[in-house]
Structures are given as C-alpha cells and as structure tokens.
Amino acid sequence: VSGRPGNPFLADVCDGPFSVEESKSVPGMNVDIVRQLSDAIDDRQKNAGRKSGQPLMLLTAPRAGYGKTHLLGRVAEAAGGQVVLLPLAFRMGDEIGFPAVGRRGLEALARAEGTRPGWTRLRETCAGVWSTLLRRLISDGTLPCANPEQALKVLEGHPADVFDPDGPARLIGDWLKKHSAPLRKPMSALASRVTGVAQDELDAWLQAMLEQGVEGGNAGLGLLRQLVAMPGEEPCLNWLRLLSVWRPVVLLVDHLDAYYRNPDAGLKIASLLLDIADMDE
Image (tube, rainbow, N blue to C red; front, side):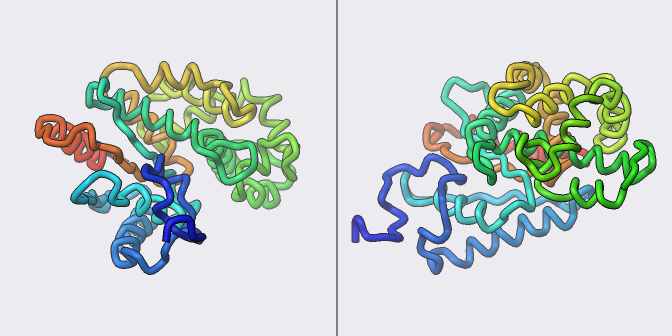
C-alpha cells in the first residue's frame, strides 16, 4: 500500500505530534486508545484549576517506529484548542530535571506551527495568557473599559484576533502595546493571585511573553530561554503555571528510544513527571 493516499506510514519517523492530521490517517486504527487519551485530556480541561488526580499514562511499543508519536498526533488534533500541548523530547546530553522540561517545552512550542498562518504555538500561548489576564482585569473592574461586554467577547476569541497586525481586534492589541508599561503591575498582581507565584518573579516572564505575543519570531525568546533554564524546579513550574492561565497544560514526553534499557533515566523521568503532576494548581 506504500504511496497510497491516507497511508500513515509513509515516513519512517514522525517528527512530532503537531505534524499529524487525522484526516490523512486511518481513523479506525487504535480507536480505543485514542478515545481513552482524549477522554483524559477532556477530564483535565474540565477540572482545570482543581486538584483532580491528573492522570499519567504510559504508551509502550515493541520497537521504535511502531507508531506512538503518530498516535499522539491524532490525540493532539482531537484535543483541538482545549489545552496547551507541550511535547518534550529529551536529548542524550540533557540532565533529566525541571530545567530540561522548560527548555524542551519552550523549544517545541517555538518550533511548532500555530493554528493561524505565520503564528507559532509559542506566540499563540503567550498572547493567550495576556488576553486572559486582560479579560480578567476588565471583568473584575480593575481596568476601566468603555465597552466591557464587547471587549470581553473579543478577548475570548483567538489571541491572533487581538495581537496580529491584521487581526479584526487589532485596536485592542495596539492599545495594549501602548499601555503595556503601566499595565504590567496589575497584570503581575493578578497573575500572582491566579498562579500563587510571587509577583516580583512574574514581571520578566510577562514582559517576555508580551513581546513574543505582539511580534512573534525571536521577540522575547532569548529572555524566556534564560528564565526556563534557571536552576531548580521553581522556574519551570512557574512557566507551566503561567501557561495554564490560558489553558490547562498537557505534557507529551516522547522519543525516549535513546533511554532504552537505561532504568536510572527511566526512573528519573517517571519521578519528574509525578512531581509535575502533583504541582499546586
């Protein structure tokens, strides 16, 4: 069947879950597993902000190239825009720990194409965090607004509508860029209340995320790389908490073939994921 349309096995290696399209796959294949994983993501989304025994799931296969990443890609497409999907592909030189999670997660989002032309997943997520915080400031009356109902409706949509120069709500984005300096303090105060992170630790994060959301490309990326790579667990956890302001975060740890028959690395990765799953909401 090689070469026929819809053959999901044309490539020996699936680079990542964002490169898979369900319409070009075989819908009936592994349908029970796809449903089980999709249900777990739905549950994560429904219970956002509450301790709900976030599930950890393990997919195994008898050999490399069996189709795990392709399967995750189908789940990613099924999840749509409900969550922030964060694929992690550790490298052999990585020291398994929180900084590696931050680096590889940021790398994956910056590389993945977004749902709007010319946008990456990183830009969408950073813009989404700012849109969410702005919406909450308007909702609680902290930020005066001439037409709050219309502003809230717009901010509930795709962040590109606000932050893209050609977006239908670009006037809000222009206003936000113009007033970003005085807004950072109430933004960081709100983000602190939502995430539990100290306010003075959030200012640099929010500034870098705003630059990325407004301009995309490499804007703010250098600072984000510095922040996520800082030693200890808190910088990475703070990054994940900020991402979850917009949508619940789902980690996909894949491409672990290099750690085959390395029980120490396997235990480190498992322990790391358990710690992240148990993090405070």
